[in-house]
Image (cartoon, helix red, strand yellow):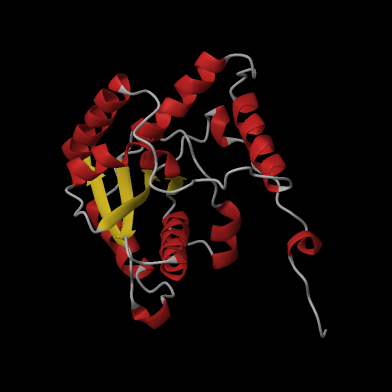
Length: 224
C-alpha cells in the first residue's frame, strides 16, 4: 500500500493502458473514500458518471461520430487555458507538449501524427474505465476548487490501488455529445473525463515526467 507521499510522487498522467478490467467494487470504494475530500460548507458539488464495458464503448462510438462530422469539436463551455497565456505558464505548457511528442518520436512538423495522438483522448488511451466529472452551472470558483480536490483524491486513491489515471479536459470539446450519452441535466456542466486503469509501463509515452518549479519558484515563506 502506497503512503500519501508515494501516491503523490507516483501519480502521473498515463496515456497508454493495459487491456485489463478494473472491478466495479474497486471503483466504488475509491469514489466513496474520495468523497471525504474537503468541501466548503460540505456542499459536495461534484457528480461523477462512471462508464465501463458496453456503456463506455457506446460513448466512444458517439465521440468518433461527432468528431467525424466536426473534427474541431463542439467548443468548450469554459476556457481550458486563459486567452493570451503568458510566460512562465505558456513555457511550461509548451515544454510538456514537446516532451510528450518527443517520447513518441513525433516531430513538430508532423501535424497529422500529433492530431492522431490527440484523438486518442477520446478512446481514453485504452483505459477500461472512464469517469466524467460535472458540476452545477450556478456554482463558482470556490466549488470548482472543491471539485478539483475531489478529483485529486480520486487519483491518489487510484495510485494506492496500483491503478493509474489521466484527467482529460479534452472531453469538454464534445460536451454536447457526452451530455447526451450520459443524460446530463441542463443544470450540470461537464468539466472533464478521466481515464482509469492499469498503466502500460512498457509504452514510451508513460516513461517521461514533467518538471516542477523549485519551492522558491512558487512559495513565499515568512516568519520562520
